[in-house]
Length: 227
Figure (cartoon, rainbow, N blue to C red):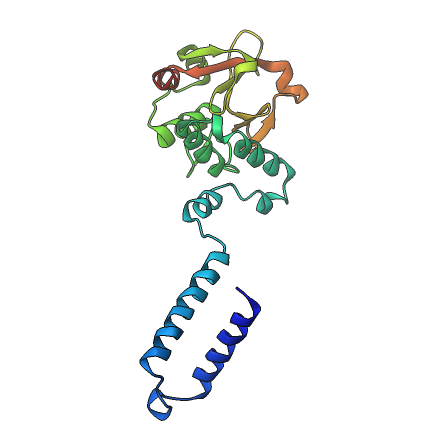
């Protein structure tokens, strides 16, 4: 807007504020009113054109992203949230739902045979609970059966929500299971005296005992259908 128009606009606004009710001032002629109306219309259009555009869709998209800043107190949490957010385009809604439920159960204590957060979880009970409540999938009751029921996944092809298995009681039997997150990290209910936590496949203990990754058949079928 030209400077002289801004000056006129400001003067007009001041006059309206200081002059009091319309009854107490000399009303302008119809010609004056027409000129003022045209000027105000042009000025308003110009000002609106300079205002930033508000995009509800953009604001909503930003509001649902993980708040990684609030997790800064725990570097492990920050890394996991950032990894999930960064790979969100490659993660189906089903996988997001699994990780969402699993993360909410962190710090639930380990209890042998546990199947519910009110009492505690063992490793297979934790995995079974997450799949049942996140996506309605019923998995076998123990880690060995869960291993047999899944489809083999190469380590390089693991995706969030896949199951990772371990030999913790000798090399012959599957005895532990967790849910893969991303970047070599998984969430699980480890052992007595501990609680649901996030660990890394690169840690010496887990690296030595890693038995492989599996994808539950029902989950693999969903992925195949989408493909």
